[in-house]
Length: 363
Image (tube, rainbow, N blue to C red):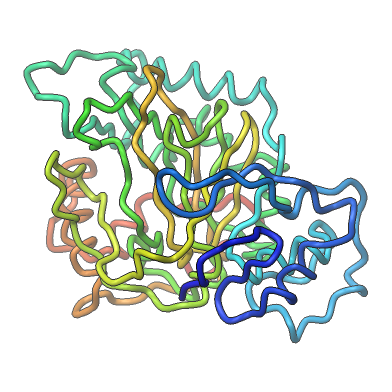
């Protein structure tokens, strides 16, 4: 799914909707504010374009018309403009959602983990492929990402923050499971561009359906822009199917489980999400997205969790494009949890999912 080249940010369209209908989704409310972003390739011009923004005050559910919504639930949190924006584009940025105090606590806990002061069970600590094993010494500069922090009480607080869950419920319903957690510490690039993440769909990693009941929450822990590797999204791509993924053939090497989509139109316009500390983007698991390489000397941090409605169900990925993820994740599961490497992807996921609101049903 691809939009035509953008010549005027006020005359663009995504997916199959017309430019006029999308512009109407953006327009004429205090809940729709200017958002700094970029369209297109490496050297494209920056535009100020409207994006649905967090509003003060509730919106009555009676103002919504359920038949026109398939990616959001009826709720009194999102404005009509916000719902339309997510439905059309597959993502929604909420400004200043997580407090500076909470982010500082997450940062401090991350540093303790990097120093080996705390060692939560089952956590996966990753370093960039450009760092040779001989160079590795404990510390923040050697860790590019931690995954599966569900056993770390301090970091897992992120997944239970009321301000996060009130938005998550708009996509998953009231019974919510945390299914995957990450804190990303994108390092300064070594020159091989290994700090970038190829375009992908997160559903590739999850043997869970239906996809419309899953949402990712990704919070900036500092200012993030194209210089330090912000998120890049293809608006409207969540309306398509799960595409085949594989490791890209990059000259400098690829980090483990950094799969990329194999068949997408490289001419599709991209939107680069410039975010401030505490800003949070909620996005559909089929949204095609990635991130650029870090051209600065600093470490770009973000904390993230994927959530699913507790009434979702597991699927068998044998014989599907997700089987490659099952193989790699099962191998990691054997190392971290001591489980047999012939277990399925859903078996591995059962070790790390946690109930965060409501009641546990299927997952």
